Image (cartoon, rainbow, N blue to C red):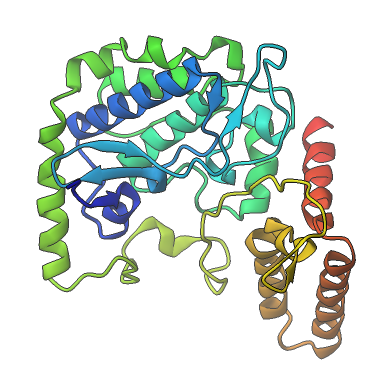
Amino acid sequence: MSSPLTSVFVFLQLKAGPFDEAQIATMLKEILKGLDYLHSEKKIHRDIKAANVLLSEHGEVKLADFGVAGQLTDTQIKRETFVGTPFWMAPEVIQQSAYDSKADIWSLGITAIELAKGEPPNSDMHPMRVLFHIPKSPPPILTGDFSKSFKEFTEACLNKDPSFRPTAKELLKHKFIVKHCKKTSYLSELIDRYRRRREAGHSDSSSDDSDSESSNKENNESPEWSFTTVRKKKPEGRKVLNGTSQDQLSKSSSLSTLISPIFSELKLQHKEHSEQRQAIEELERNIQVAEKVCPGITDRMVTHIVARYTTN
C-alpha cells in the first residue's frame, strides 16, 4: 500500500519550511529526474511549482498535476499556448513565443527560490502585473545567505534566453545537486516536522502569517491571491453533460483567477464613490455577459493584452 502524499506547498504554508539546502537539492534532484523522463518522451509539464511537488512519509518525491502537460511531436518541436501559473511562467510562454521543455527549467528555477524563500519571486505583485513584469525585467536572482553553487543553479535555470538554459539531464550533474543532495529518506524528517506542526494546532490554511513578507502585499485590503494555473481549453462541440453545456465547461479561467479579483480590488478602492462603483459593477457584468455569449473570450482578451504589452 502506497504512503499518503503531501504537497510541498503545505509545508511552506505551515512554516514547516523553507528548507535547508540539502533538502532543497534532494527535492530538486527528484524533480529533475521526473522532468528528464518527461522531456525524453517529448512532453512538457508546464506547471512546475511547490504546490505540484508531493512528498511521501518515506521521503519519496512525486510530480503532480499533469492537467496542463503538453506533447511535442517530431514535426512540432515547440508549442505556443498560454498555460501555466503566472509567477512561475517562463518569459517565452507569457509572450506566446514558440517554447519547448526549457520552459519547465525556468519554472524549476522559480520553484528553487520558492523552496528557499517560502514564496516565488514577485509574489507581492498583482498576478496581472507579473505577466507584464517577467518578460520586460531581468531574471530573478536568489539573494541571501545561500551557497554559491545554489545561486549558480538558479541563475542557470533563469536565463531569459531558453537556448542557454541547461537541460534537466545537465542539471542533474550540476555541482549544487551533486554536492548537497542526500538520499530521499532524509526528507522524511519534514513529514515529522509537518505532523508536529499539525499537532500544535496549525492548519493547512493557517492565516496567522502577519509576521511574513506576504503581509505587505500591494493593497493589503485586497483578497488573498491563489496562484491558480491558467489552463488551455480544449475546443469541443456543444455536447451536454449532466445538463451542463460544453460552452459552460469552457468558461475562461482568467475570469476567476485575474478579472474577478481585479474588480474586487476596484470596488474596494471606490466603495465611498457610488457612481464609480456602479460603473465598475456594470463593466464587470458586461464582461460576464460577453463570456456567456462567447465562452473563452476573456482568456483570449487577456492573452492579447499581455502579448501586445510585452512585445512593445
